[in-house]
Image (cartoon, rainbow, N blue to C red; front, side, top):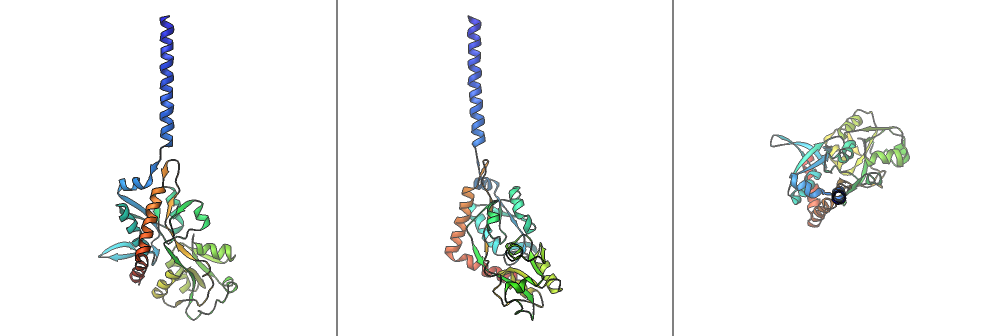
Length: 276
């Protein structure tokens, strides 16, 4: 009898331990880390950008130190301030930004990025914080050379790789003779040297670069301006392990504050002056 009691007691104890173990395991798998709190605990917001896209982001020597400045820098500094953290940049090629976000190398991407449907499949976007149009840049003296998209199709077109402009000229217009480079300055040099005939890019970017580079001008055409260049911040989608809901809300709250106060427009004006 004693042996039976001992076996029964031992079996009951094992069942209880098993239930506790299952409960603990189940609980841990459903626990999510709050991304916003994680960033606050670290004290740093890791920002992915491609700092050669003035006036959005570009390098400038300030007080003897090379810094990333521009419109997106103004915005992300405000986002970080509202979170109570500092900004740490990861500067890379534009077409590598979303991959870096997916790999958790950065927390957020700010790079004048348009939230198109293709990108929305892999990441979440904030509210749009800036809207601009697209334009064509050509050699001086050829400002009247493009009247329609058919005219554009006859030219050697240059775009920044991985951008909505690249998608527009290759997929929407079906242009096959397209030079796609990673950096806007490289495209400007290609245009100056006559290796391409036209660059399709955002209006704010064009306005800055035609002042920096000789013998180029913005084309007098409406081709391209039917596709708006909008800018939003990109964050990783929430997963079973990490919840980005409060993180994205904090970003949107800052964007709304800047828009309501008029600071968003002021920051673009300041960025344009910095880029001159």
